[in-house]
Length: 607
Image (tube, rainbow, N blue to C red):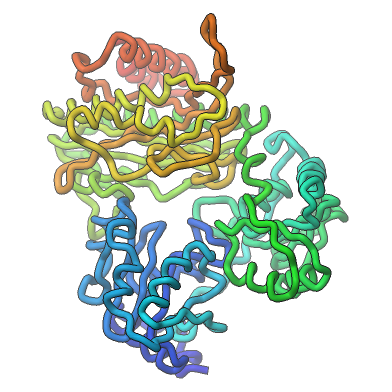
């Protein structure tokens, strides 16, 4: 027991310098010279509960991806291009040196600071083997070593650490899920058996939710129940979950083929698979290193590969596609009401960023199907819009005033679908530069929306289409163009993506991805335009030699016509925009109040 174990939960928050000092003292007690602090929980999820927000507690960083490394005399925090500006606002650089994870990777920083014989600790529940490999190599080159800890040293000094979540789970109705759980389990079990695999370890909560037609409330924004599962080749499942989350009705929904166990039994179940010499499928990209270590140590034969739920979950079935279209219609109506409301504000009554976030959330919440945000709304005005994953706080919230741009990236969860949409709005009269940059982003957005491509094409092969109009002007953006999206599940879903990063996953009918090129001028403004699009069969032209695919645009919301420089659009681009706006007007008008419908008619008039 550490001296802080008995401290009352009402203690005033410790400054981050004091937290860092406490961690270093605990590292010395554990005979460690450093420690890795990822933004992760045992499931490697993007959204994690407060009880596992160790990186935020230690550093103050509030982004969705990051890693801190603490040594005895120095510390650094590594973030990607989305957070290079935000990290400097949120984290004391005197305590943690900010570094770009790609341009200034952890292995380079460790090479500068590690000494021979030092022991760097890591929590084996919070890293995959792939994440650890380059750090282990850097330690080895320096004559140091990585050491798995049995107790996370941050947990030993985090006096007021929140309790783990205990939200009740709920069934996902068949009319939204489209396929019953037994059918899914039997099909995946048969696939495993055909590969000579006896069991698959499932560590991703969204995979378990999809497989068992369950939803939960354990993490912010995404309707997930935290649990582990083992799927047998006969279609049976061992589910390791807090029993308090499942009432009698839900246990009946799961059926006898789903066997319930407390979470504490999970490691023993892994070791039992090993003792039986089972061939076990594990996804090394999402499974904690502890899971692979225990399986191997106990004698299991690993079949490393994709989580078997990933691709079936990504290929939305007809019921899920119907639901997501309905969700996007009601979401588009709420966003249009917000855009109309904002357009009616005189300069003296314009909100600040937090006021805009609250108003947009209120428009969505007015609909009975609303289940909350699918991520924290990004509402960045002027310079804040250039921070890619900015989140307004009382300290940073800017007042909207005429003469600059407001970037609003938001989304919602509905029982039948998940939305994610970005619109950039001129407050007052936009400048010629605003219009030029916005239209270049729009051109890339249209190019991706309208493309036809042969089956077997990956998202990385399409990424340049969205960037080409910006590249023509010597511009670019430092984030991916598209991520997968779930069906009343995670707003970021794999394995499909559209990005510069090479991908071997082909786009298939039913997959939903975002289409969100952007442009960001540091210290000035940001632009992003985002729709969700679904891969669909496309009519092949006469003489085509290959089956073709295209995209169905799901998002329904007007673009800001004041920002469109029509002289930069080709006739085909103008036609696409007019056709899209006509569809937006046709679908949303019956869902809108009279004044908002009239405003939408003007906003979607042909260019």
